[in-house]
Image (cartoon, rainbow, N blue to C red; front, side, top):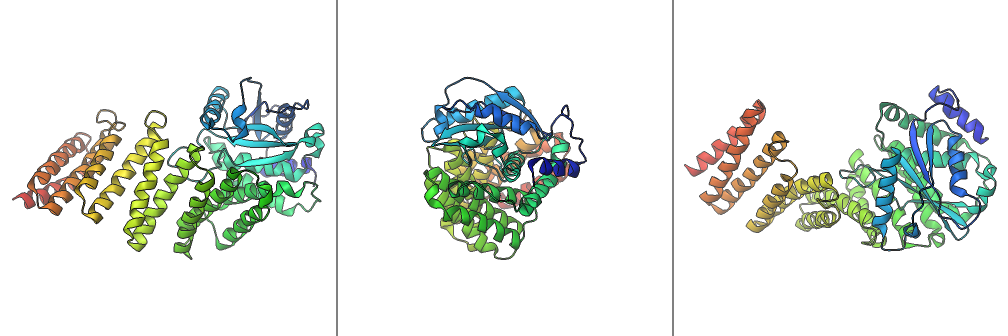
Length: 445
């Protein structure tokens, strides 16, 4: 099947006319590649993408040092920050970086929501696709299946914002996967590129099936990712191993959340593979390390709920503390706020389980941190909800220690929440908080 035939099928599928002036569904920026050849690879790649009217493509000649693209330095923050700037300036859904490495061009894909918490399923900026450098001297070398793979990566990585994106992303991915499965044309790409292709295919398939994943889907994605690891001699850098194990972790986390069969096994596998990913995606790659830590914290908490293993609860708190180091208030205010709320809840559970006043008071501190974002004037509902949580912690401390002082503190927090709930006329919350106040009154009396 030719590239034009594939694109024609996609256009037909969308009932979209193949006109040159049509605005694409997805806005893509291609940054001028960091290459040492005279092929102008970035511009040629942008022109290839423009042939598909799904994409509104901008080529960015922004000149700045791109040493961070070697992925081996300690300047990963520069990579993230430069990309964010370009995304904002061009109002793009995704940007594509290119870097020449040993006679190949490595593509990496960046979106503005890539490392935001809460995070469902995402491509890492470190997920890479390699293309032979000589392909750029003759664009016809880009086969239909390779272009479909690239289209699938771009569409999978984008978090839909507009209605047309939300409507068409699942339809497009499903169609691309079908077209790739039907493509029996001979492949001239060598074995050394396959681990990266297999990892990307696994991620596309997972993105397409994540909301209704079946055992068959899990088996297919497992085979793709295991195929990537079978050719491990071509995974030259630790981060490439980490990317595959991160994909495995995402697979089993989705399987745990969406299936009922082998549920506990999926949970253990998710933890195991995320932990393995962190061995390779270490603190030199803080965003990936922090995001994986965030996912691990939730999985350890689920492990504790199923096994009543207090060490798993400690691990949940520890992982969230690691995520907290990356997602700071100054740089990721909303992600930091989300972490503080979860940390408050986990610490409350741990404090009760360990019967530790100190841990319970650490939970109070986390909730107070959350109120630095959810202040009373701008977010009265959220602020009152947090007051309610803190009041409940003091109530539990009062019962645990048989201490009226904690109960008085609980009453103060409940009363402040009641005042706000009454002002915003949240009748259900008012009723709930009055019941809590009755419990405190009965205890003190």
